[in-house]
Length: 74
Image 1 (spheres, helix red, strand yellow):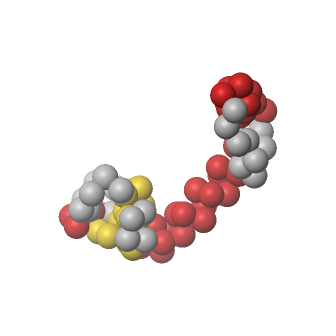
Image 2 (tube, one colour):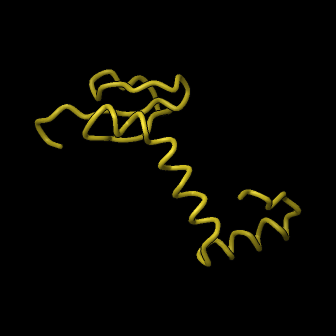
């Protein structure tokens, strides 16, 4: 994305910001377009749910069960 405008999504304010306006560490990105940044929370949630349902998450589920944490994330 060198030389092009990039966009970030601010998780605290739930708004899209340009890279030159990136105000805090509460942002995710960069994204090539404002629309991609706007859609990023839904995409991240989809990826998180898929990971939680995968075998890769099993060791972490086991650790949570051992510590007594609630493991009903999905």
